[in-house]
Length: 104
Ligand SMILES: [Zn+2]
Image (tube, rainbow, N blue to C red; front, side):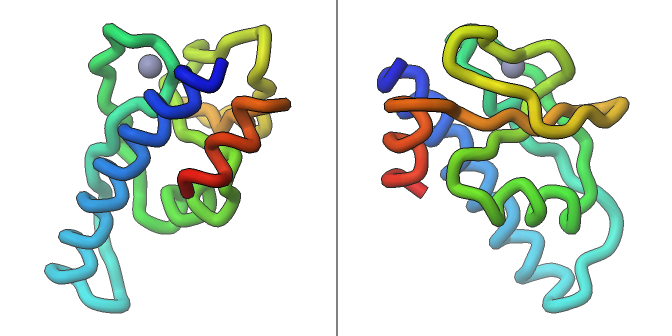
């Protein structure tokens, strides 16, 4: 489970870099959407999620939350927080969640 958390945190770091690049373009008033990588624990997942920056920041406001493609949830160790048509917000539970939070 801790390995999963590190896998997900790696994508989170990559997505945050994308978000920083958007800030460079749009400043404090981001517009439009960008593509974030699915932050699930599936090693071969290459799904992209089109999301607006506000929604992305909402997920990032919580250290244990990740933005995933609908259905990309591990029933053992993750719980679904919110379901939207194009993505779900999941929370890492237990040791995996603590590890994810420490890497945030
Ligand atoms: Zn995925």
